Length: 275
Image (cartoon, helix red, strand yellow):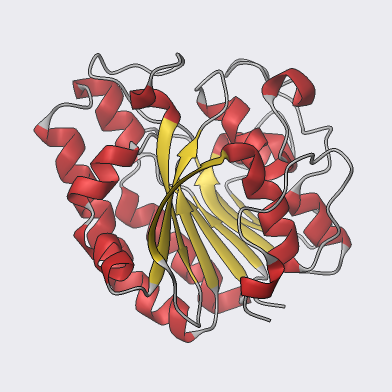
C-alpha cells in the first residue's frame, strides 16, 4: 500500500486556489495531478471540519459542533486506526489536532513536540499561534517526513485562515499567501513524489470577503482537492465531491478497513490507486 501525505491549507477557497496556485494548477494541466472541488460540511468552522476530514462523518454525528468543544475524538478516525494497524503516523499541525487525537487539554510545554508510538499521532509538531509562518509548518512536516517516513503524514498550515480573518478573502494579503503556499509546495512536492507518496491537498473551509466563515455560501463551503499519485493524474475532473468522502478514501489508500460509521464511498476507486 502507498504512503499518504495530506496537506490541509486552512481556509483556502476553491476559486483562490485555482487562480493563484500556479504550481498545483500546472500539475493539473499536465495531468500529473487530478483536481476536484469539495463541498465542505457545516458548520464551516475549523475544529468540526478537522474531525470530519479524519472521521468521515458530519458534526451532528461526531459531536464537535463548534470550535470551543475541547475533547478527544470518540469516533473511528484515520490516526487511531492507522496506529492500531501498526502504521506510523505524523503531523505538523495546529494544536487542536493534538487535542482531538492525542491529549486534551493541550499543554505547549508537554505536547509541542511528541514522539510516542502509543499515541494516535505518534510524531507530532504542534503550534498554537494562528500567525505561525506557513514555511515553518511545512519545514516541520518535511523534517517528520525524512526522519520517520510515516505511513500517514498531515501538514496543516494556518496562514490562509489568519490572513483571511484579518483582511478578508478579496485582498492582496489573502491572495498573495496562496502563492506563498503554492511555492513552498513547489519546493517540497517533487521530493515527496519521488518517495512514492500519494498526496492529497485540500482545505477545511473557505473564507468570505468579510474575513469570516461558518456559514453556507460557496465562498466558505467550496474548497479544492488536488490528488497526486506516482502514476499520474486525470487533470481537472470538474467534479464536486463531498468532504465526507475524504476519510474513506484515506482508509482505502492506507489499506485500512472502512468502519461502519463512514457512510460515503471513496471519491476515486481502489483500482485507480497506486498499489
